[in-house]
View 1 (cartoon, each protein chain N blue to C red):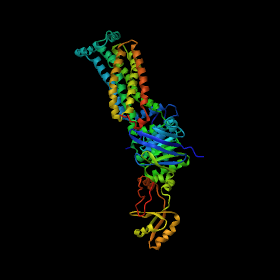
View 2: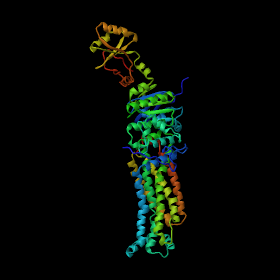
View 3: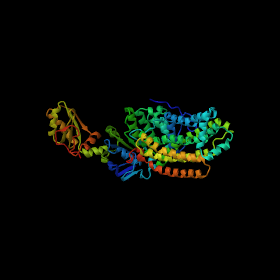
View 4: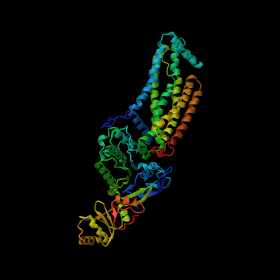
Length: 323
Length: 304
């Protein structure tokens, strides 16, 4: 039996005057998963987060969070959500401690609120007595994260959560996201950083112009765009790799200006023959390895336009049109 | 730049064993949570409340004390004559009341009594309105400018609770300053003028009416407009400017009403005060609609 989504958007539309921020956006997030919203600035990621919690109402379409309509049952929805905005949204005149106490009281937590624990989780406990106005950007982000998890939310919405963080803190945040998902919590994260999303996402939703270009698990999306296997091939003399075009089973070849080439095959069974063919013709291969197209390559392939821009470098074979 | 914050007490409730203020027991009233936090921010901003204290100190203490002391102790007859001329501007009912209180007092003493009871009345209006307007103008637009409107828009607090919390946080500084100032003013007036008019005489019944029945609804009416402006304008500077235009007629109206409360003894002022309370209630109720999550986020199309 399919799980009831924690978040479900269906043909959601939201405009701000003449600007259409969400234009028929549809996606769903199931419990205990990490959904990453990818897209350039202005794609609608932040508006999507606001619509999910009911901070903004949709002009059209349906939004369901925990099965509720956030526009009608906003308080109940927001009680179970933890949000970290792109900008930390902290009170500079108050201390870190007072910022967390304010959140604890608004969420109805009382004296037993785990303020120290939440702060310690993000390494900010020593700075709680200091005024937030004096915090660095990274400290503010960490405090905002601590505030977002204070009330143990069922749904965590993170907008660029690693922005301004050093590598250790970024890793801690990503590790936390993994932990929360493993505990059954649902996470929706907006990010520009494709590498972050790649290791983390159960589902990627690529937004552009307020619409979802694609939505699904990263590996499935990659297979949709590139259904055939790819190889990374390099040789002592890269010019000799032009022979790849003549090898049976090679669908396309993409030459990189300063690096290994990528070869699309009609099946992995072709690899031994490919190696043998090249070696027979004196090509001194230095690298032959399977290539899993990254989320970054997928992102640029999808945003490359209708002609299907090359994934990497210039093709020496007729390129495969990318949908 | 960082500033260490020493652990604070919270309304008389001692801090915990580790010296840190703990969240209170969960309560239905998020209104109080919002109000407390806004007031705490105000308290942490000496650059904001110090001028307020100076303003109140000048109008309630320094100016009255200096003037009253000078009048009651001056011996120059020409100056006494000029001061005595102030009595002539008062209504007959007020002059009768002064003569009844101090029939044998000198013109200077009667003039100082008149100043204390009647002519310093605008203080009770100007001070709270100025302070509360300054706080109220910034309260909603400030959330938007700081970006904290995003936090509030995603929090489980209703727009109504936000509005009421902000209203309380705007009312309290002005009205509290006025009450404290009023208390000190009473002391000053009684100490300086009292010995010359047979003992302590202040506050009069009319002043109680002014402080408890006239000032609060006018303050509330002004704030209902100021908070609506704060929700709608794009910047705190614009809010302050717009609020200044609103408070000026409000001060004039309140001053007229306060003068009427002091100069007359009829029940008409009670009715007018009652009507002001009704208008205040309507204004506040309508004002609550101005707070929307879209405006907190700064994405409302009609922000001007």
